[in-house]
Amino acid sequence: MLSTFIQKLKLIVSDESLRGRILFLLAALVVFRVLATIPIPGVDALRLESLFTNNQFLGFLNLFSGGGLSNLSIVMLGVGPYITASIIMQLMSIMSPRIKALYTEEGEAGRQKFTQYSRMLTVPLAFVQAFGFLMLLSRQGIIVDLTFFAFMVNVTVVAAGSILLMWIGELVSEFGIGNGVSVLIFAGIVASLPSTVSQVIYGYDPSQIPMYVAFIAATILVTAAVVVITEAERPVPVTYAKQVRGGKSYGGVSTYLPLRVNQAGVIPIIFALSIILFPQMIMQFLLSASNPILLTIANGLNWFFNNTWLYAAIYFILVFAFTYFYTAVTFDPQSISNNLQKSGAFIPGVRPGSATAEYLGHIITRITLVGAVFLGTIAVLPLAVQAITNNPAFAIGGTALLIVVSVVLDLVRKTDAQISIREY
Image (cartoon, rainbow, N blue to C red; front, side):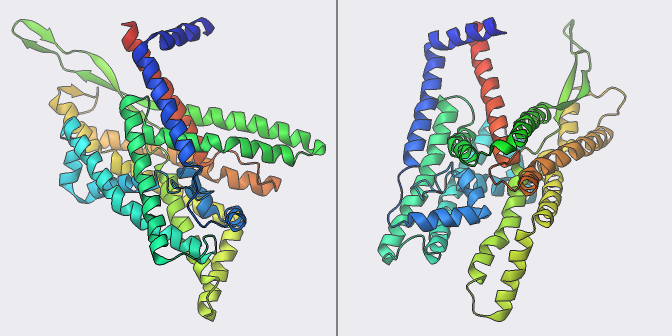
């Protein structure tokens, strides 16, 4: 194992093209981290720190901004607008057969056009989100009073920063290794690790050594479980019918169709958080209202969000439901059945056509149950651990862990693919 790793490392160092891709990736990450440290004008640092300590909504958005939101940098939105645009385009593919055909039936050219539409949608979304966040932060007193012109300049700078990050992500996908957008989010999560570790060390108590040991062991086990479930597949055997053309025999090959257990990835958690955290934003406005009815609603929302176990139960149910919803959006058994039939392939013991589609639908429904329970458990695990230990630094699982594991596995696979190409 060690000799294989050393051999691959030597190939990476010696191959100019592969070395160039890795150096380009590292350079893009350095540029991103530099941009994330440049704040917009007029920020009250003390109020900003207090707001992030008590607001889970902003903490979630800070995750997808790569840490840029926590100091109100010029890239405070991160790749959030692009992710939102991609989700909107995928949801539109349900309502519009033309957009669905563009993504599923027109090959690489259609997917490139689909991606281009997502980029175009990102621009207005970036301006809308920049205006909304800066207005919210101004009302919270985080940003000092600015003239209208200065405020709009900040909006333009923040929106441009998000668009710039989208462009850097696209460059990483083309000239580097891995999915550029995912790598930028991964870099932001990893950049926050030192502060998390220092928080744990600062609150170190010798009498809690067994708890620290148990936390480390649980973290290792949860990470291993995430890797296993993320990579898990249900193979469906597929056989290609034998055909004779011009005296030569073709087909007759047996292979399998891999159906992923976690078909939806991290998207259901994003959907669920977006819905369950939206009332928190409304609550921030209502708490300062003078109307007694609005104040009662705000206090009710505040009680709900402070009840950890009720909050976790609703969160779990939403993640579970969205896992099935998103899998139904992205996995079309009828389309796969038609493609198999057109290519002369069939599942042994299952008739082609509607019977194959029904068979695949039955399988995906069962394995999605495992994926939905897994995603829901990972999503609420940090809340449960923090409630049990009463230590906010103890957080196992969550969106960050899923993203980190997915990006690392993707980088390893794509690096191995580049190495294999050069070995041949």
